[in-house]
Length: 92
Ligand SMILES: [Zn+2]
Image 1: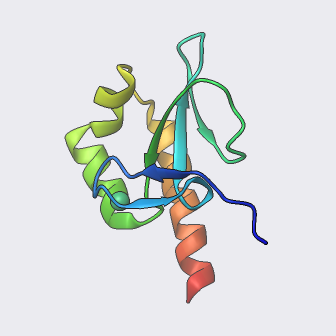
Image 2: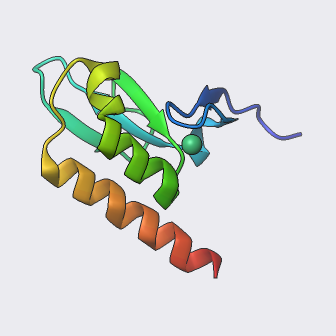
């Protein structure tokens, strides 16, 4: 039996997916922001699909910022983009 993975919803397209299939951006207690690759970082999280469409839209409309109530540094977006291109490459 597979262990049930909790589902989370993409902020952009609204699709529900197991949380380990979404990218999680977390606001830490100290107000900094990280891309959480482990799913174990504690803090307030925002989830988006690991695909270019959701990423671009999130960045354009600043949806993650409004969800977390904080500015997302450019290096976080770069880390997200790198993660997405890695996943998309491996699916080809
Ligand atoms: Zn999405």
